[in-house]
Length: 255
Image 1: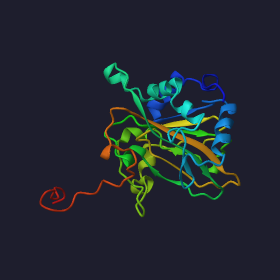
Image 2: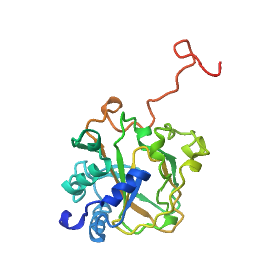
Image 3: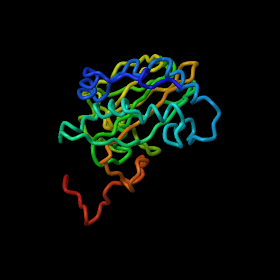
Image 4: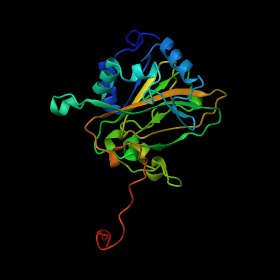
């Protein structure tokens, strides 16, 4: 196994500033191509010791597949996530981070895209801080359906849970959203390149229109003091419902 500290870099001050301004940042060569190749080789092995949910496979914490676990829980990667979240600016105290989830994902040619949504609005966390990394384990070209972001949309706050079947996504629900928060340009990733986005960043992805599978690793941290419905992170819009039209919450406007 490769030494992680030789193959994982620190995020730069410029990348942190871009994340704070736009709600996302592109982290070119966050890990070396050699380390990305090792992650991919491990992910593609037949295994019985990982969770499989469709094409999503949980690696680092179930029960911990190397080098995924050592990478995710490394001091350097934790420091990178902490600097991006930057909760210290409000209290001068570091807030510990917890594992939220991680997945190896293989999207074959013709795979559907991802509807536009906000992660934190779907997961139900009670405060900002959750963030998600998307790392290419092989080259990903724009026609393969890499993510797109609405620049600065993390500042809009929660816009609603939209991932239940039959509901419009955020671009359909708010057709003027892109007038306020322009769409990011398509990304071209080399192995080991990564994007990271804020929990309230509006994002989605087009379908894979290429003739190659899109191979990536998604991993996410959350501040340890965050509270979640039922104390779990996997909620995905299951709990929130509109207020009922009754005497407890009557309509106020228009009357």
